[in-house]
Image: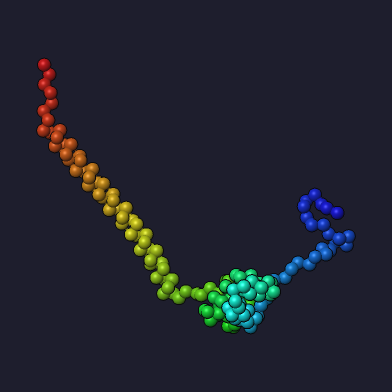
Length: 146
């Protein structure tokens, strides 16, 4: 049976026969083992490992980054499969945050300084042109009427 609203049909008792899938959870040991197996495999076998385990290459990439950062298997590190990207980010120190802020501010001020210098250059040229026009107007005698 189908509905006009486009919803999935349900069985006669009102319960959806397909339960909602749950998110897979991988232990740090499993992650380390898969990364090691993937890195030691020949190029032709890497895809076979991913297919066999039902993984994506992005899993291996995230887990490798987490391992290299020393966060794979630490206390407080998330052990979810696809949510590991958020846990693998390295927090920046206060000095790094301030340094990035100052660099952005410096770039902004450099751009403003460049605009100001260009405006001053244009104003100087306009002033010189007006001076020249004023001097030429003073030197020219108006034509006499006859």
